[in-house]
Every structure is written in structure tokens, then in C-alpha cells.
Image (cartoon, rainbow, N blue to C red; front, side, top):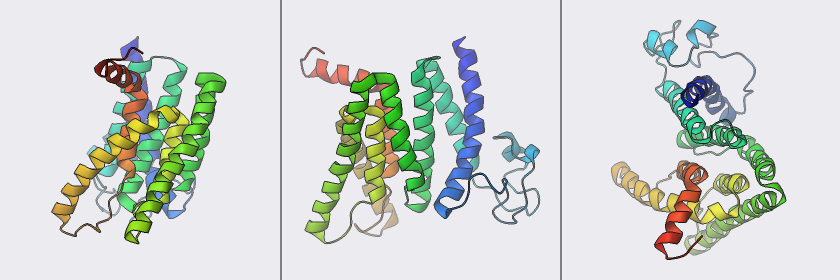
Length: 260
């Protein structure tokens, strides 16, 4: 049963991965995600249903538009594949429980936000604000009043922590060090997982982001003023905590000599 469920959600993830690509392309440009129908961004020709099958169409078309032969970016099949694998893994982890619906909603938002941030250095309000609302409602649904309260504290604390860090950085250096989108993304993660998740998310994303950022600076040879998107690191840390947070906390308490 669990493998059939994983296969079903893998298929759903592939299909929603195709929609995620639409979101990545259109939302930063302020375009509707519903109209017009999917079309080639180069020649504007509408994409037929048989040319819009996740993964398969990209392979059959040899990564080129059927009409203008413009290259179809690797991002399109990669997003579909990542979403399919993620949703299949979540289905195997949670089974048919309410947590599964919350998990696939969160992962959809985080993958879309991460790719948008990588491509445009933006984390659109059109995704983070609804994400905060969905997170608050989900926390209340799964955890009752206490879960909702923890989530509300997580929203306020998540935004306030990064706002304070950004203000201190601005006062010390005279320049902006973090975008407001990062504040809202951390607030969204607090809404889904409560304030208890924030220490791990901040520490893990900062550690990985610092290492990756230094590597990027060396490779880009642009110096310390190189702009680096931080959203993907927050998103990845949030995904890890959402799925394995309880295990991580148990390990830490055991390592520190405490009983949970």
C-alpha cells in the first residue's frame, strides 16, 4: 500500500511540478498563473497538451520548442522531478495522515520560492503571505490552540529576528545585508512549524549559507559585496526540520545528557 501511495504522489508531484514552473516564471513578473494558457516564452506559441507532459515531453522534444526550436531550460524537468521525488518521499514518510497534506503544501511553496530566489533574488509576497496564512491554519488544525499559538509566536519571532539582524548590519556597515523577503520566509516557516523550529533553521541555514557563499564569492571573483540569495538555505533547513525535527531534537537532548 505504501509504495502505491508513493507512486500516486510521485505522479501528482510531477504534474504540480509543471505548475510550479509556471509560478516560477510568471509570479516575479506580476503575471497571472491561470491565463493565458502555457506558451513558449520565446515565440509565444501555445503549448499543446501532448507537449506539456511532465519530463516525457521535454525528452521527446529534445529540450527544444516544437515551433521555434528555442532551448527549453533544464529548470523545467528538474523542478518536475524534484517535486515528484519530494512528494513520493513525504507520502512514504507520513502515509495518509493530515500531516501529509501540510507537508506537500509547504514543500511546494519552498521549492517554488527557492527557484525564484535563485533566478531573480526575489521572494514574492504573493507566495510568502499566503504561505503564512496556510501555515497558521495548518498549525491550528494539527496542534489545536497550543499549536496555533506556537505558530503565531513563530511568525512574529521569525520576522523580528531577521529584521533586527538586518538593522544591526545596516548600522554597522551602512548597507543592506538581507532582503525583506527573507524575513517573511522565516516568518512563514515559523507559521508552519512554530517558534521551536527557528533556532535550528537559523543556525543550519546560516552555516551552510556561509560556506556556500564563500565558495561562490571565490568562484565569482566579485568580492564580499557579491549578492547571494539566502532563501534556498532557509527553505532547505525548514524542510529538514519539518520532516526530522523531532529526531534531531531527541538526538541533541541525548547528546547533551537530557531526557525528553
